[in-house]
Amino acid sequence: MACALVLAAVCRAQRRGWWDPSACPVQLNGKTAIVTGANTGIGKFIALDFACRGARVILACRSETRGTEALKEIRQRSGNQNVHLRIIDTSSLESVRRFADQILEEEKELHILVNNAGASGLPKGITADGLEVSFATNHIGPFLLTKLLLDLLKKSAPARIVNVSSANHRRGKVDFSHFRGENLTYMMDTVYNHTKLHNVIWTNELAHRLQGTGVTANSVHPGVVMTEVMRHYNCIFRSLFNIVGIFFFKSAKEGAVSTIYCAVAEETEGITGKYFDSDCSLVLPAPETQDQAIKTKEFEYCERLTAKL
Ligand SMILES: NC(=O)c1ccc[n+]([C@@H]2O[C@H](COP(=O)([O-])OP(=O)(O)OC[C@H]3O[C@@H](n4cnc5c(N)ncnc54)[C@H](OP(=O)(O)O)[C@@H]3O)[C@@H](O)[C@H]2O)c1
Ligand SMILES: *[C@@H]1O[C@H](CO)[C@@H](O)[C@H](O)[C@H]1NC(C)=O
Ligand SMILES: *[C@@H]1O[C@H](CO)[C@@H](O)[C@H](O)[C@H]1NC(C)=O
Ligand SMILES: *[C@@H]1O[C@H](CO)[C@@H](O)[C@H](O)[C@H]1NC(C)=O
Image (tube, rainbow, N blue to C red; front, side, top):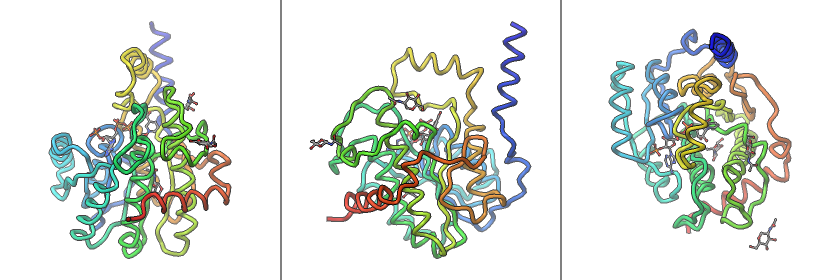
């Protein structure tokens, strides 16, 4: 028993990493930040951190009820009333467009965009836009959102885009027919892994296209984090994840750290097109993400899929 406790303490200490958001003096007064999927899990703690630094924070959530609860909590815990809820469903191109229109109407500036919303283990499905549902949620929707907000970000430069990807991207495969739900096997997290690979490819390509604009784009791995991420898996897997997690996985607050590092730290100012590990260290992502032919095709494909008819 004592041994297990010592082991757990060592693991906890190790996974904390070296960067401590509470020791980072950066203030965000006068800055505007959008965090998607901010009502729970990692996203809620990212939004809370920005709010504590004085930013105007927009919680981009799909559920009015869940979003309102988080809004109250974040306002209360940060003492910052300049936190607002706007509705977006990243799996629907129409919803993404509506959200972006509202932002462009209401906001004069945008300094931080965190594409955090995502889901793993979603059942097979094709959206109204003809897209595979995990790809729509985790990749194409966020692609369109970023595209529509890009001019506002450029106008507000220096600005930062952070994409919450995953170490799982290393197990993903590039096959553009996946976007429409072709050639996919739905085994556990296969589809999720593919979507997270495309996140990194696109972030890299976008960073390249944004050179000289003062807008940076990076992706991060949050770590293995105890959130609702397993909600679409069966109860055996969920229980196992939660039990093992008590000892080895990060809390949602700890999972937010690598994203906050990328979004606000002085150390990451000007860095772009990179992939950060959960301990905030710079690491090389999967080789496919550096392949120029793939990156160009990624851009063309996503452009085509999100083009307005
Ligand atoms: N937890 C991990 O171990 C881990 C590891 C690697 C990467 N990640 C990534 O970290 C990010 C955050 O995940 P999490 O662990 O915090 O999971 P989570 O607790 O399940 O939170 C996911 C968030 O995304 C939102 N979301 C899901 N689908 C959406 C949609 N179609 N439109 C708008 N919002 C949507 C959820 O909203 P609702 O609550 O309304 O559903 C929720 O706010 C994800 O991108 C995930 O892939 C997590
Ligand atoms: C991340 O990368 C770009 C911004 O750099 C965005 O267009 C793309 O869709 C994002 N995907 C996610 C959620 O990782
Ligand atoms: C997805 O990635 C995770 C983490 O790298 C890996 O454990 C899992 O086996 C992958 N899933 C598939 C089906 O490749
Ligand atoms: C994907 O499926 C289509 C048919 O739906 C097929 O023509 C194509 O060759 C497949 N691609 C790969 C890479 O297997």
